[in-house]
Image 1 (cartoon, rainbow, N blue to C red):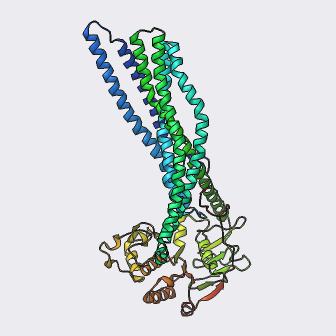
Image 2: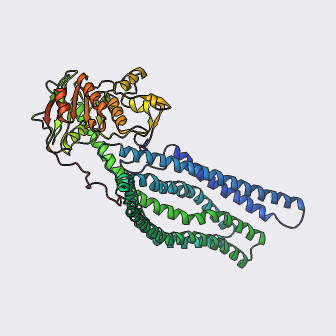
Length: 554
């Protein structure tokens, strides 16, 4: 679930809920490592010639603190990974939810890039950036304080390289961000091209165009390679800066200890403290890299999430308005349908029907009837400033909860793509509340046979419907649509995916269906059903506010 503190469309907060405990735990782990480092440093000061027993205790103490610090590092990595994975899980859910919100037209390749490369960048920043900072800063600060207590000049010498590193990181990080953005654009274009190529693979193979398409993929890959290498220059510089700063901090502590004539044991202890702190200092370079890559990913994630939040808010506004709308005259019967869809079905002549009505939707624009069906089931939103009125059995589809809405309307269209899951789940997807006996009856009604599959109804559908044939997918779509006998049944060009026996069966099912049927299909089907033709107005193709998805996802 989205964090309640998050703004609509923004990435969720890190320091909230259970993640707050993990962040505080990382801070505690950093403090613990600093405290153990201080104990180890004190033990070093006890390594003086004399009685062997104190020396043995000091050596054992040093070994024990080293092992304990190692154990805390392991716990630090585990806690940081939990933090990052929990955060990414929430963002991933938001991204998928945005694609399941009506009105989304994000390209498949862009969606894949967002849920893989971009989320990987987000995880790296939260897990190995924020997580490392949460534990590393207390360790560095504690080390600096401890060294200052040993000798103020030693503390200053330890902090000086860190100050220089912080100063040069500002311009470096800006360059890293710009190059990360350029690399992200190239990856977005490549992901889009790959998705388009794979989607059109059958046509490409048939036209013997594989070589040409591979050439286009190679060209897009070359751009990604060039920009990745270009980015690696600044990334390598940033990482090297952290390493150099850690080395200089340790050397500065040693040099100042020698120059000031400190006791050798104190100098060794100071070097040990600086050495323990060198790990998070080295990590600072990686942290800056992760931060800039995260910012580049956030720049494309936030607009998408904001657009989805806007669409959800619009849908909620429509639902709230629909909840208070009065039932139109003649639409309050349990078998009545009353539809007004601005741009397709005007309010002056609403589409009304009663039990047993068979209506074929026609239009001068072939896509208009399908667009009307999509609007009816909420796949597309009404244009800004307008409101659809979809009344089925006296209930406004824009106001009812999802469970009730899917019980009122069933839709079966040509080329239906099924979600991953069992054949039984695909059939009962609209009405999981109904019993298995009803499911088997509907399965037989459309002429499907589970016996041809080794696992029967437990057969898992993959890749949109495999291993079903085109005819079987159409039959399954019809079975899902009529399952539970919704008052309004929508059938869009389904006959084109059916074989001869399937078309005859479709005709019989539609003729005997007890509710209202809207369909698109040939004249012979309309004649056999005694259907009334209703013309749907042509309407401009709806697009997203930015004109649709772009190849570079920017």
